[in-house]
Length: 149
Ligand code: RB5
Image 1 (cartoon, protein in one colour):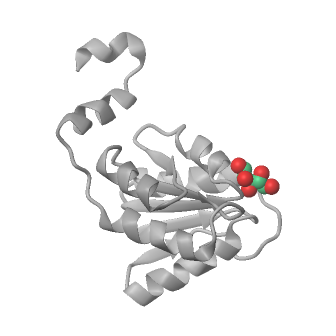
Image 2 (image 1 turned 45 degrees about the horizontal axis):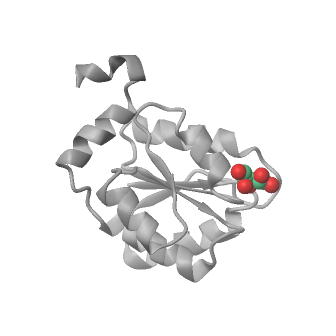
């Protein structure tokens, strides 16, 4: 299950991504908003993070103007690894090396074609594990506890 959310600056691109998910038969839920009235992006980032951390969704897609504010808010939650991706390469590496579970994009940065490619790569790429598993684990530990791993 994929969950999506945006703010007003990302709602148009989110609609394109919803069309893609419908076409590929991917189960998803849109957490809002439904229109481009101004909203505060952190509220949607926190809402989406909760869906993933509760196990109700596997991965998420967050879209604001740049993707940056959404990623900052989502990454405040332990267990959320939100990556701002601008192209297929960053999306691929966010999955292969970082095991990103939330994709963030900028509706004012990437065009619809690029964004759809990014989503395809993000959903279709597996985490490599191995040495990257240890590094991803270290993300969750503050510096004074890193010898525990
Ligand atoms: C809204 O104008 C804009 O600040 C927001 O969409 C996002 O880009 C913040 O990071």
